[in-house]
Amino acid sequence: MARPSRRQSVGYVAHFESGFTGFADKGSVMKNTSGPSQRMFFCWLLIFLCLSLGGCAAGGGTARNAPRVSPDQSLVSVYLSTNGVSAERISLTVDGVALLVGDLWIDLSADAVKLEREKIEGKQMLLGIGAFPTGDCTRIRFNVKDIRVGGDGGPGLEDRQIELPFSRSVALAGNGSTCLFVEWQLAPPAPGEARFVPHFSARSQEVPLGGDLAYVVCDDIDTLYLIRTDVNFVVAALGLPGPLGELVVDPVRRRLYILSSGERAIHVFNSANTQYLDRIPLSIAVKPRHMSLSADGASAFVTDAATNRVMKVDLASRLVAAQATVGFRPERVLAFDDGGGWVAVSSPTAQRISILNAETFALVKEIPAGLEADSLLFWNGQLYVGERGSSSVSSFDYRTGRQLARITVGIEPAYLLGVDNKIFVSNYRDASLSVFYAGQNATARRVPVGDGPFVLAVSERRRQLYIANRDLHGLTIMDLSGERVKGVIPLGGTPFSIGILD
Image 1: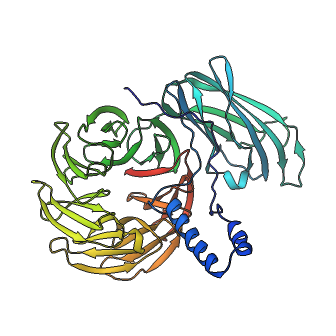
Image 2: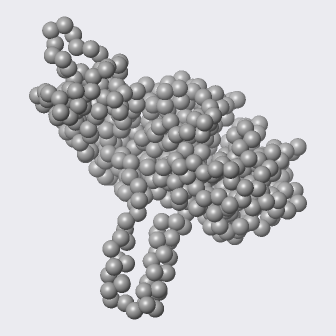
């Protein structure tokens, strides 16, 4: 499968950072050199620049450069977790991670990571991600130092270098992406061993069978991550031609559809075993980005902001069955069934929602909406629209276009998801979720969830809500029953789209 070139870069560790400090010192300079009117002018200018650089599009992510690969390189994400249990207070530092590719040791460009047994036990940590040349990867090595037993004041052990073979060699393919895993064995010391000797093992990824899986597209590294929802661990990664757009899961047909803006195509996988099945071309599109699936799974609806089009794709025939020009720079698209098939398309620039008949693809109605109307949700007979520019969510009668309510939420609502009788709204600019009940016109509560919450997905079976934190480069996991954050899944890139297969 041909893939476009990607920019080459060194690897990085996926730190969890927050805050914006790019203009921290400019205010004091202005204060010392400007009069009151000039200071006011510069304040407004500063606000404009901040919004322009950071807030024009929800989900823009941070400015950090992501690792990219050339056609003769592959991305490798290296994860560490623990195996077994221990009551010891053990801490150590891992650095100098390198992979043996062919007959060359190649360093993973990543910071040293301090591990504390009580903090990492039962969790997974991303040691780093980087670009490596193609070839067979057979071993991994790293340094273990600052080993302490019984806390920081306890006795230290000698630093050592660990070198581990993989159970089978890992073929690094051009423009590919894969995961490698290191396990810290926490078993009690063997007879005759010291009180604590650090033991590790290594293994390559194995793509799991479908079920209890979360699929996550990271659009900055053109990678699909697979996550087991029973343990919330990353288990595999796949590289795809990008830039990548939205993904959707058909749980009935067991299909996974991933939109590629770069290839102007839909990639089709069998979600039962994540086997690649097909590539559906979208030759009339220029930059398709968003996609929705019909209720029966027979059609996909795709928007192309570059041509002001929305397309209906017949997934069986692999053809664009219909197209329509809607709004100006259409973005989100939502197919819903309410006594008939309908398609809603948002146009943030034009501040309107277009409603089409899913069968005939005729334009039924255009609904004026609020500032930067973007995300869409059909829930309990109402069409909800997230209005990024006005920090609100409006509900409409889609048949008449009448506005039913406007609900104030957090700053820059990026995504809407309905679960049970509640609607969750990700507030991209204030690191929270707003929660309100369907049919009510006020936010019930706001839940902090970390920086840059974007798309949302739910595992009904596990009763878990997954939140793509673009600024954190990871997924936040929330328990739906208590609406409490359970943890974070670190990723090697910036999550853009999530699909769940229970």
